Amino acid sequence: MKRTFFFSLFFLSGLFAKEKKVFLLHKYTKGASYRYSIKNDINNVNVVSGNRMTSKTHTEMVIKEEIKDVKNDTVKIVFIIEDAKGNVEVEGGSFPIKEMEMMKGKKIKVLLYKNQVIKTEGIEGSNFLSSLSSSYQFLPRDSIACIGERWKKNFSENGREEKYIYTLRGIETLKGKKCAVISFEAEVKEKGERKRMRMKANVDIKGKGSGIIYFAIDEGVIVKEETHMKLEGVVDFREQKIYSTTEMESILEMMK
Image 1 (cartoon, rainbow, N blue to C red):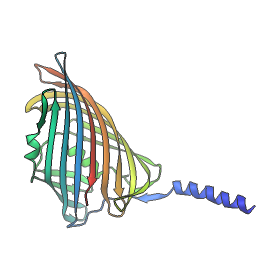
Image 2 (image 1 turned 90 degrees about the vertical axis):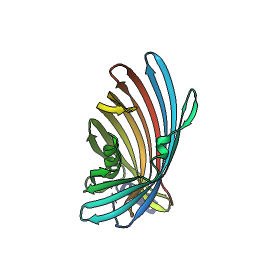
Image 3 (image 1 turned 120 degrees about the vertical axis):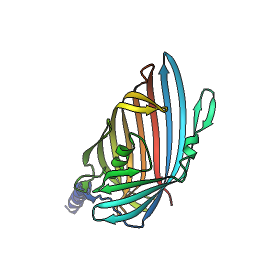
Image 4 (image 1 turned 120 degrees about the horizontal axis):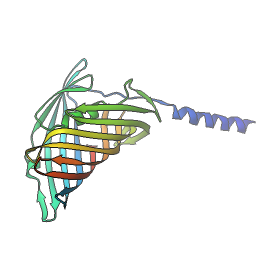
C-alpha cells in the first residue's frame, strides 16, 4: 500500500513538473552591457542562363549591446560592432570580404517601445528591422508559459514576412545562467524591389527554418541562439534572372 502511494506521488509529481509555469520577460537595466559573437555559414547555389555557380561564405562578428536609457516602456540601445571579418569561397579561390572589415567600430542605435523596434540608425538593409524585431518579441504575449506550451508570432516589414511557432522545451543551465530552452520553426517570404549587388532587382524568395534559443530567466536576455534556414527563389534584374538556393547556419552566443 505504501509502495503504491509512493509511486502514485512520483507519477503525479512528473505530471505537475510538465505543467510548471515559467515567467519569461525581457529585462533592461540602464548601464548594462552584453557582448555576443555571431557566426554565419552560408552555402549558396545560383543558376544563371543554365550555368550553375556555387559559393560558401563564412562571417564572424563581435557585437557589444549597451542599454543606454530606460524610461517606462521606452528603451534606448546601442550596438557596437567591435570586430567583423569574413571570406567567400568560389571556384576561383577564397577571398576576404572587405565590406565586413569596414563595419568595425560602427554603431547601431535602436529605440524600443514595449519591446517593439520603432527606430534604427546606422544600418541599412530591407530585412534588418524585421530580424531585429523578432529577437525582442519572441516571448509569449502574457510573459508566462508552461513547459511544452506553444505560441505563434508574425513579423512583417517592407515586403518581408516571417512566421514563427515557438515551443518551451524545458529549463537548462548554460554559462552559469538558468535558461528557458525555446525551440522554433519559421516560414519566411520576401517579395518586392530590393538592392542586390548594388543594383535594383525584383525578388521572390521563400523558405523555412528552425532553431533553438537559450533565454536567461533571471537576467531577461538571450544567452545563445542557433538557427538553420533554407531559402529558395528568383532574383530578377529584368535583363537576367538568377535562380537561387541558400542554406544558412547561424550561431549567436553570449561572451564572458
